[in-house]
Image (tube, rainbow, N blue to C red; front, top):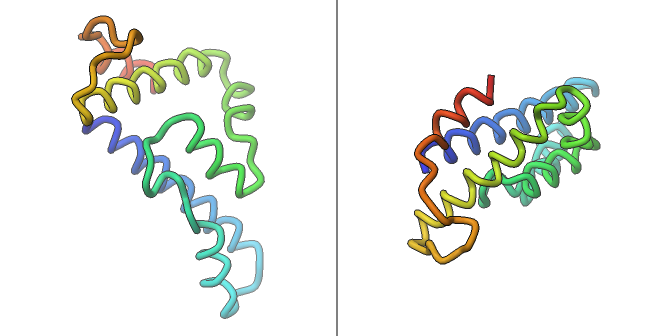
Length: 120
């Protein structure tokens, strides 16, 4: 769960940096605060897991096709996205004490190590 929360914070910080870059392209004004609020309003990463849907939706609000760009950057990112899904599945099972999903057939003791090495 700690790994998931750390990754969620990283994604949220990256989203905030993107908002700052967008705001940096317009002259400073009293509208900056309003625009910042609108660009981060209902940000899914503020309240939901850092899953592919939430990450993609938040960056799409900034005009970024996040997962398309990630896939174009490195072909290995498709496997990394699948590992993100596995990480979130286990995070949810642990947080909600619900291990009934057929996707959770055994504890992947290698999960943390694989996640760590694949994020390089």
